Length: 98
Image (cartoon, rainbow, N blue to C red; front, side, top):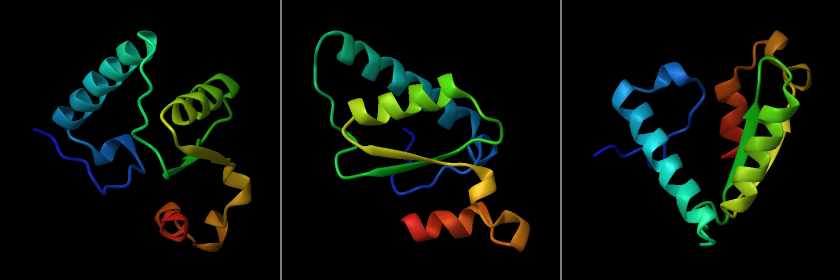
């Protein structure tokens, strides 16, 4: 059994193949429950920060909608809004949000 509780996901490379499969299986189950009209609030009280290297309206919106449907709040940060060029890492920024 995979336990990702309390872990931050900064890059897909941070995950093992087993963890990726577990995430995909969970996403499939949550989607089925949503289609049946169940309210699944696994993100109640949680904030999800989204940072994408390339702009993508559909990807951003699909993530925002999914987070809202699961009870959380999502916000998008553009790389240009971050201090990456000044030596602040994505991990440093994530620590402020946590």
